[in-house]
Every structure is written in C-alpha cells, then in structure tokens.
Length: 330
Image (cartoon, rainbow, N blue to C red; front, side, top):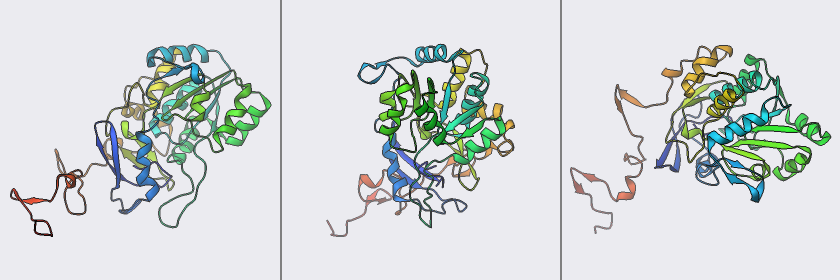
C-alpha cells in the first residue's frame, strides 16, 4: 500500500535485497482502481535514503551509535516516573499505533497525546488527497477505543513555547510546520526522544533516536480516509537495527513493568483490536493482498508486455527458447 497520502492506493513493491526500485499500482476497484499518482510512484526513494538504521544516543555531532536493547533500557529508565509529553504521527500502521497508545496510557499514565504528522498538501479530483498521512482515520479510531485524547499540533507548539514540556517523546519525526521552526521551540525541553524511519532536522536535535522500520518491512494494517482498512505484507526485513514501532512499544513497556505479550504485528492486533469497535471484527488473517489463483501458488505481477518485473532488462522476450528478432531485423 502506498503511504504517500490518505488514499491508500494498492501497490506492488519491486525490490532486490533490501533496496526498493519501484512502486507499481495494484488493482483495487474500491480504492484506486488500477492507478496511482506520480508522487506516490516516486515515494519509494524514501525507503532507501537517509534511513535511521542504528539507534543514536546524544545530540547532533556528539551522537553515538548504540544497540537497540541498550537504548530501550536507557529510554525506559529516563521515562520511568517522569512527566512526559507524547507526540504521535498518523503515518504508522494500526498495529504500531495500538501498541504505542497502550504503552503510553498504561506504562506512562499519559491520557492524551499530541498529533503530529506530515503537513497538508494539494489534492486532485482523482486520487490524491490533501492529507499526506496514511492512517489518520486509524489513529482516531484507536485513540477513541483506548480512551486516549488526541490534541492538535497547535496545542503542542503552544505548550513548547510556554516551556511547560520538559520531556518529549515523539513517535514519528514528521511535523506539520517547518522542521527548523519546530526545533527552535524545543529549546526548553530537557530530553527529546524520537522514534523515526528517516533522518531529518528533528532527529538531529534529539537526545535519543530509535530507528523505526518502514511500512514495507513489516506486516500490518492501515485505514484510509474513507474508512477502508487494508492489510500490507512485508517485502523484506527491517534495515539495520531498526524495528517496527509496535516492537519498540512492547520492549519499552517491559522496562516500565507493563507486560504487552506480543511478538508480531499479528499478535498485537489479536491482543488489542478488541478495544477498537471499528477494527475488532476485521479478518486480519484473511485480508492479505496476495494474488492467488489457487492455494500455494502466487502469480507474479507483470508489465505491460506480460513479463514479470525485471525481465524486461534481460532483452527481447523469447518464445519456446527462441529470441524474437528486433524491429530492425538485427
């Protein structure tokens, strides 16, 4: 699924190893028919560039790489018993958000979180929506089901400007204003921790950064703007020492004495979705977007000429082992 906006266009991901080379639209009459926008096609580049592949402790040039287990222990000790403000981005999957809100509600005793995410953008009359966050609807459903209040970003900036926030945990490193301006607001924050997929101005200003895996690196669900919940499958494992947000939340919860017994996104859904009326009846195991013609056999998506991805680079197609002549006859 494309996560470039709240439309949630279905896609195929072409990759080699852990490098993504292309997004292509996958047919879904209810969401995108057989189309996707140019911005969505090019958004694959974010999976390859400036990824947070290793946790960092320290700010800016003083930041040092660390192991995930050690950073979780360090952050857990910092959060324990502290007054913490939490900011959540609607760019994460439902499973990520359920585990995260369960952790902040029960582990940190936080009853309200600030909503960050990507800035609004332009829309068209076909596919592209103005909301560039793929899971705002899911966040709204989950927060309501968990009894967690969602506060607008404007209230976060107001609190920062007043200097009333000393510890800030940001789940996601996107903000709906200029990032440099937001960093200026952090001058009164004593400890700023971020869970982020990509490096940016916010991660450079953080005291601690944990790498979050991208949506193509884990299983899960997203709920697009019309309320359609869709399963996504993993293309390849998380890069480096990055982990899904749900795993970060589960491990941090353990450090604070809270047991979230889930070892996969599927287990997170089974454990926590019952609290969300709109998700509790979703058939997680039956809604994986695999194009199966019969049990055990999956067909490969093809190009316009019928060949699977990557085959075009091998030259002209062949029939029964005989290479077809090129149009020039050579």
